[in-house]
Image 1 (cartoon, rainbow, N blue to C red):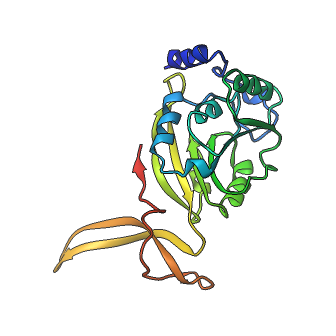
Image 2: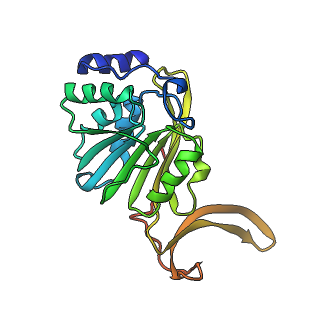
Length: 242
């Protein structure tokens, strides 16, 4: 698999392969840099039902810019990478220039980044731990946002304001590590998301139990109690594999 990624770099005349250790980065809560798997990222973008022309793609912890270059193959409204490493930013800008990528690299703190207006698709490849990730998700939870979380080590941080669209596993660039991923979407204001359980029973016989996710419109938001209003399948689909 590494050869495929090196071939991607060679054909594009860029350098996005290779890792950067945590010691080379500047934040104590940051994780090592690893390049985005090419096949995975192209595949997940194809599978998502997004209004791409009105959606801004943002890569938090954009590293050397590979995800931005891949996103440039699709008609996103804008493409932005936010990177806090002063060593990786100039490499990413050179890679974007070499591929005529219309993406933008912003050097600065991810915790302080102000998200642009409009629909958002946010990608992060395990760029940081809970200290940084939690406030970022808090700000995003009030927006119309979809998140692709690769190497999802902290799914517990996505609370009841998020619903899972997809989940699965994929390999890293070397093909040596199997990584979980999740795709989340914010739940619109006024909706409630949770789980319910149904028992299938005939007389005294219990034939089974089915637990499923459900999203309903609240009748009394102040009291936080969901009603039996119709579900919203178009914007809140059930989780899909791969």
